[in-house]
Image (cartoon, rainbow, N blue to C red; front, top):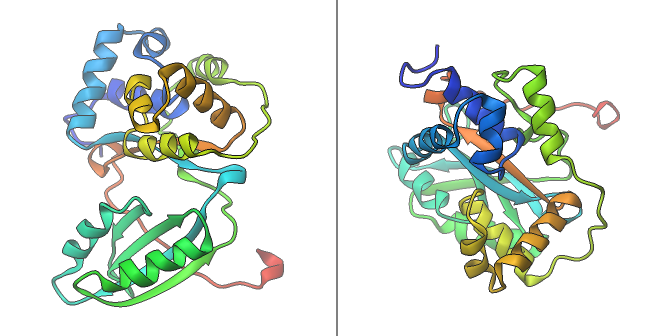
Length: 248
C-alpha cells in the first residue's frame, strides 16, 4: 500500500516525468489536467524528500563498460561502505542486500581499463570491504527507464509520446562537452540548460543542440526513479541464475 503522504496525482506526475523526463511543467500540466504551478510544487516536494529523482546514463553506441559488483563487508560496516560508494560517479546504483553479499553495485566506466582501475584501485580499498567479486556485463536486455506505475490513461500516454517523439539522428562520436553534459545529468536529469552550460563549458544553445542529438541518436537515457515510500514497493529482490548460453 502506498504511503498516505502521496496521492494519485503524485504518482501520475512521476509517470509523466518518466515518459518525458525533461519536459517543462507547462507541457506536462495540460496532460495531467492541472496547472503548471501544482506540478512544479508537487515535484519539488517529492524531489526534496528524496522520493523522486531524474538521472541519466550513456546508452546505445555510447554505452560504457559495466559490471555487477558483489561486495562483502566487515559486520556492521555495510551502510558505511554503501554511503562511500554512492558518492562515486562510477557507481550507477548501490544496493544494501541480504543474503550472499552485503552490497551490490552496478559500476560503469568509459572502458574496460577504467572499469578495472575503479574496481581494483577504488572499490577494493574502501574501508570495511572484505571481498569483491565482479561480473562484467556484455548486454542489457531491459533497463528501468521503461518502467511505469500505470497511473496514466491511454490518451495521456499518447499525448506524452507525441511530445517526445523525435526523428532518427546519426549518432556520431561523443566529444568532451557531451561527456560533461551526461555527467551533470547523472546528478540531476532535469538540470536547466543554463546550469548544464556551466558544467559543459559551452553556451546554453549548444547544450540544447548537443542534448537533442544525444537523445535522438539513443546515446543517452534519462530515467525517473522513486523511493519505496512513493512507489509502494517495500521490498526489491535480485535474482542470480545460470543457464546454457544457447538459451540466453
